[in-house]
Length: 203
Image (cartoon, rainbow, N blue to C red; front, side, top):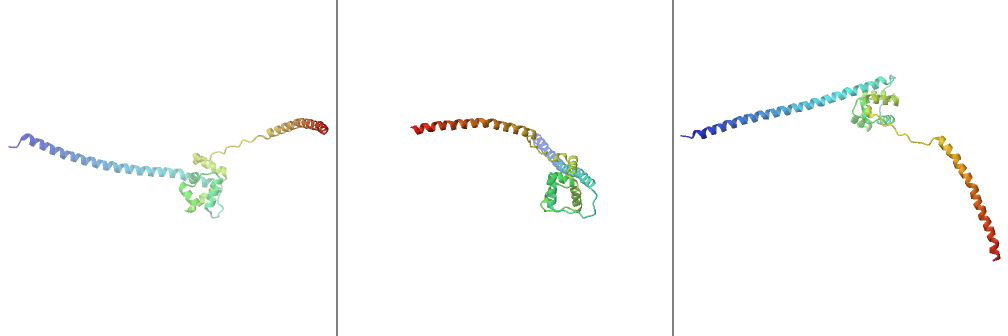
């Protein structure tokens, strides 16, 4: 007759192993579900960030076109050199110009080196921006992207003209005062030389 105690223990172990496997299977399924949800959340966050960025950029481009003078019917032109020249003239970074035109800094960089060419609506936006003065362009940057404003130039300290004029007479007076002393020393030297000349002849 088999031992009842050992048989009972074996059965308990078998059932425990069965329950453990079932529990592990459920845990693995939950891990997969959590991983899929995390991936989905990351995708939604990226889409939201892109939408927020797009929403912030489009009004800037619209503001540029609204502030620009009315078009005269001519077709807008574009060249990489004109883009670089305008950006440097207004002291703009590529990021600041990108925000005003409703594109990315990477796109502006490609336009400047001639790798890509802007679309018609982007050329029109740039043409409208180029018609504005530097002050208006910087005002738009201050409104849409204040962190991209160019740093103010340091003022070079120059001596006031009044101070220079005040120093000039002083130097002239000092030069004039030192002149008689120099003449006196020269006269004494000449007199001493003349006195020494007869003594040398006698000797």
